[in-house]
Length: 396
Image (cartoon, rainbow, N blue to C red):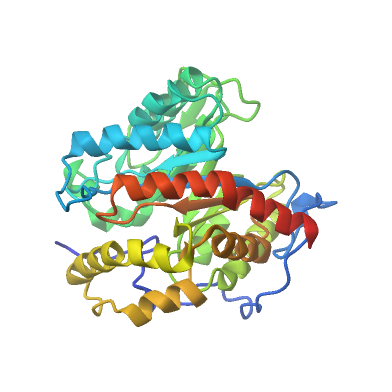
């Protein structure tokens, strides 16, 4: 497979995780947990404090092709039906947000997140439903907006969209796009999507699709500022500034390395939001994780599937082979939020505090990790991790 030449949101190998940060200063050390009270001026808040509003707890999945408990790979229809059941359990367990990511390769079952989210919407009443992410570069912004506005209608206002350039390249040749246009595709399409959010007549001209002349797009939503939209960022300050320029939320994809080292991105985003004159927008975190009754049991259940997934991607991308030492380092010092409810809660509290984030999204599956394991993790995340984190933040 061709390696992604633009790995901004690429799932970095833990041993290679870089301290990704803008060039405006060193990463701060992790500090004490901040108080959860509303910030007096959320538009200018700094990392290290929580913005106004309640912290939201999300779960993310790419619909990885899982194995049964006896090691049998499931087919795509089985995985998709299980994913709907996972969404229903997340809603029942008190989780706030469910995100489903788009891929176009055999080891992931979801190519149309909004379709699966619509199925989950019909069986839930609380969950916000978001893509994690939609690969805007290889899609049409008008159709993306229409599809998610439709999801928003059938879910009674619970839909959001997270836009990204993607960590894999399969969608580009599949839909007839040239990777040489990688940057221009995302830049132009994000600009158009930002205009579509006004939900009024749009006039737009670019090089990546047909021009629009006072064109309205339907359905519209009931949201005051159009469909809630985030931009997923994994590695460059320019992408952070781009999200701020369009007044969209920032979702930090922290796949490797200490979450605290991404705090300068959150700081840059907030400064940029102010400079562009937008109202305050929120910062979200996306990281891998898994919850079991004990730290030991969580590691025992998760490691074989983590190791196999990293080894497979590593063979495609030239990474060194994973090891138990690297796995332990990611748990203790990196971006892997894994362990007992208490252990995971402490790490989430540190992460959201360091970044001033108001949403944490845990990618709860990894490779062949069985559906039954994920169901247990989902229940613990909603019923035990969430209240523990809120107590930690309120009591600090």
